Length: 291
Image (tube, rainbow, N blue to C red; front, side, top):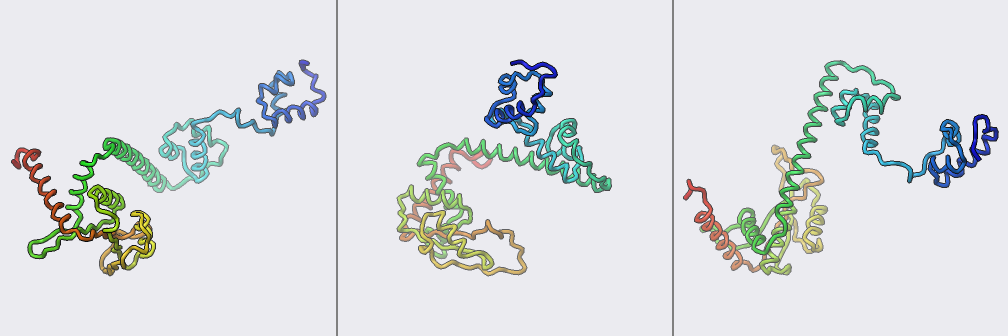
C-alpha cells in the first residue's frame, strides 16, 4: 500500500520492518520499493543508525587521500602543507577536514621551515618514484639470460672480484669474495654452468667483530642452499676505532668467501677467457681514439 502524508502513525512498526530489511542486506531503493516509502526524509529516519550493506558501497579512489588528510590535520598541519604532501586541491581538503579543530598557529619561521621540509620530502618522493621506474624498465630489458650471456657475465664478474695469480706469487686458486647476495647468486649460477659441482665448493664468512656472526652464517647458508654446519670457521676482522664504519646494522652480513677445490686448471681457463674478451673488445669494439 502507498503512504501519504500523515499516514505514518505506526512509525515504530514500519521502522522495525525497514531495519530488518537493511540487516538482511537490502539497499535503500529495495527497502523503499518494498515498504512503499517515497518520502526520503521518512526513509532516512527509518534507517537512521543502520549502516548500508557492503555490496552497496561504491569504491572511492579518494577515500585514502581523505583519511590521510584528516590524519595530517589532527597532527596540526595547515591546508598548504596537506596540499603539498598529498597533491590535492585546497577545496577538497577543506571539505574533508572542516569538522576537525583548527591547529594552533605556529611561529612563521617554524612554519616556513616545515613547509620547505615538506616540499623537499615531496620532491624526494617524486625522484624516488622516477628512479624505481627507470630500474624496472632496465630490468625488463634484460629478459632471459642465454648460456653465453651468463658465461660472459661470470668471466667478467670473476675477474673483477675473484683472486688472481701474480708472477711473483703463483696462486692459481679460484676464490671469490663478495657481500652482495645478487652477485653471489650470479656467481654460483656461473659455476654451475661450468660444471663445477657443489661438492667442490667451500664457504667461509668474513665479517667485523662487532657484527652478528652466527646470524650472518645462517643468512649466507640459506642463500646458497647449504646447512650452516658446512661453513668453515669465520674470519673475524678487528675493528679500528678510528674508522667510521657505515656497513653496520641488521642488513650487514659481512662477505662470503667461496673457494673451488682443485681449481688450478679452471683458473687458467678463466684467465684465458678474460684475455680473449679484452682482445676482442680492443679489436672490434674499441672507440676510435683507442684503436
